[in-house]
Image (cartoon, rainbow, N blue to C red; front, side):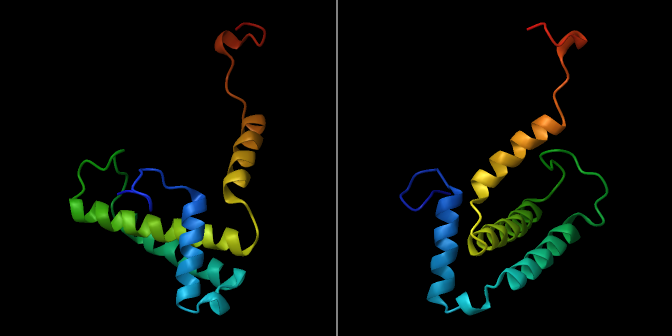
Length: 122
């Protein structure tokens, strides 16, 4: 699947704009309060959870899954992503920058082990 201009790059900025346009075209802006979007997001996470509910542990890459199960999973993952992007937009949060900042904070909180346990060796 390609982006709007035929390239393979799908950005958070593109998704944000498409979700904004989608809501405007349907006059849904009035329903897109932070609370409503959060509740919709939680509902979608529940639908995503249902896919895995009775599967037990699954292998990376889902090699034992049927193609239609993977397609359904992609749809539910997309629903979660799109509501998250829309919620962040409505709240005025740059989700990409917030995510990069969080990765940096996590790196400080959970530092990678130093080889050989020696902090001075490189």
